[in-house]
Picture 1 (cartoon, helix red, strand yellow):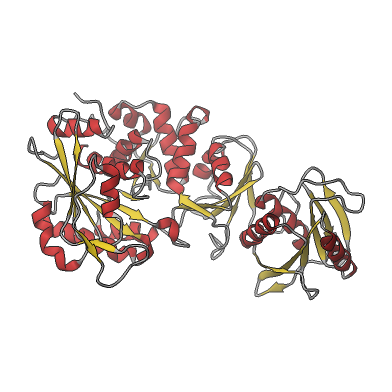
Picture 2 (cartoon, chains in turn cyan, red):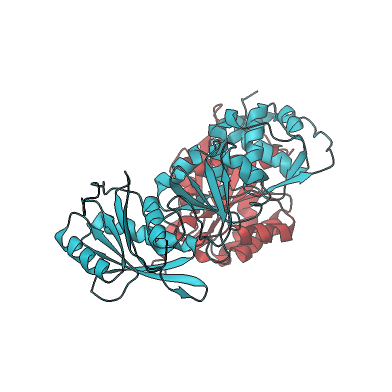
Length: 340
Length: 179
């Protein structure tokens, strides 16, 4: 698309009609954008602000202000609001990008106006970043890694292009940030995080490394433990995961599992992995745990960047001795073992 | 494996003022804690208007009727003399730290050293509360501090009000003791 040209088009079924305008300005290597709004309902404005904040992950520092007739890079207007349509006319005449939320504008299809903040991000990007497709990140500063078939969790654990990086990840139209540097997962909505968690063992993911300083900048409405997020996702669909490679592994740090209180056996596995390198098979045998459960834990710990893999085979750890006496009763009370 | 004298099980919660020790005890215990709460002389800290001046005490009763005694140490440094008294015979310590206070690496070092001075062999787990209140919260400084200290101990971010999360800290402590 030629810079400076104005093009109107609709996103079928997404709720938005878009008039694309010249790209926003560059400042200090990071794009800055001023987004104004007119004729939006409060909840539409709220989602717009969330989406504008999330643009930071794409290298755009966006501010949001009400339309006052002065300069801006993009105007978001309510398609069913008379004032919004009036502002759209003015903005189009001035070659300013326009995002129309809902309504039926200039013959375009009526669009629902309940699109998520993540969907808004894509449409804002389509206007502000020439060359960036609605479903891609062509103008992103770092290359994206897409997973067609393999599980997102496996890619996180194995793809060397993703190793030890803070990432923005997208699946099923949802966007989350996986911050290994801080051990946190961030998203604009809780729903985004839950959907992503439930799809960790499926394909269809795309990942993009976040440049330093952009991690967690704006997309932070919901923050949680990255380790717990990955483990919960892995355990929910453990049967979909391939067996973990038969190499000895260990942990230098305990994963942050406070938000995974159901993963009780994982605590015993972590304890052993923290003490010495051990193979997945030995780990399952030592603790009498289903190998698929062990595999899910190891995939999750590897994806969080905590798991160390060792080339040398490790000696099998001694079989876990059952607790006795008071400790056995204590362990049973807290669900760690059955009382002997 | 640790040996614990039959008939005496003691669990201790430690950490600075406002980290959520009394709240955690309330979450995990079977009875309401007997607390020695007094109004803060410095005025309210956040929404907190009282603090523990001696210790909190509550019990958890096992299936066979054996009581587990749960103690919460006061957070103020001038009550440090109570630590060896309360911690004597404990199976381990849950150290709760408040993410809002920042400086978590130094807090970890301080509290681990304080616990080690009382009993170097004592099992310890760390729970970090209020992490959701801190923009840009990171576990990295805590993990770096623990590596520096050479102690791979469990560190969980938890909401002390949620029973399951508080109990998971206890489970992590027991795993450290038993296995």
